[in-house]
Image 1 (tube, rainbow, N blue to C red):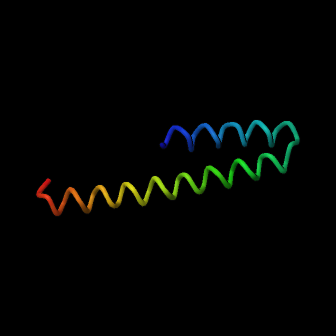
Image 2: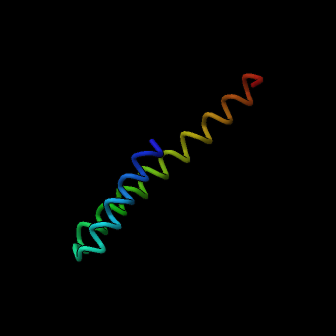
Length: 54
C-alpha cells in the first residue's frame, strides 16, 4: 500500500512540473488518503500483535 502512495506522489510531482496543477493536487489528495489508511492499518496491526502476545 505504501508503494501506491509513493507512485501517486511521483506522478503528482511530474504533473506539477509539467503544469497540470489540477491533476497534481488531485493525485496528492489521493496519496494523502491512502497514506492515512496505511497508518491506521499499521496501528491496528501493532495493537492486535501486542494483544496476541507478539
